[in-house]
Length: 178
Image (cartoon, rainbow, N blue to C red; front, top):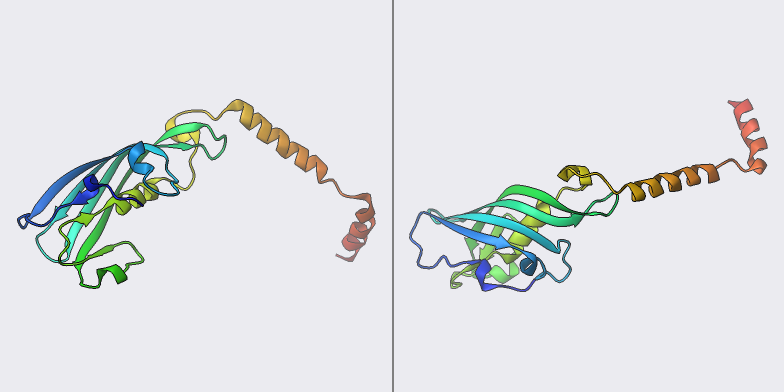
């Protein structure tokens, strides 16, 4: 993912305590990813950076909409999302080689002046999208033409699955043995 300066937290020089940052994720942001699963959206993110202790704590709160497709009729819908996430920031001189598989810890070098949260913002937006997305989730009805086509295709498939007459005799033998 490409990096934008506006999606960083410049922690050097901040006093101990909680600091508040606001970010807006839009189409420009989502297109930063090389293979975006989310192409468009309008998401506001509030980040609370707690510099009281080490590890530092970053609390994320996402609210907004993601432009996506209905899984049933592929109509475009604006799906509301809302989620909260927490990650910890630790310092390590070998930060480039350290990776937390659970995405709960960010390792940064002690001489880095800011924390890049671009990738985390995208991941959290992606994690906020439900597994199954339907028009009903946003108070709409699915496209009736598509639903009619799907139902007709299903009926045609059931009709095509009639038993081949060559197998009927074997099925009779099978039922006699049971």
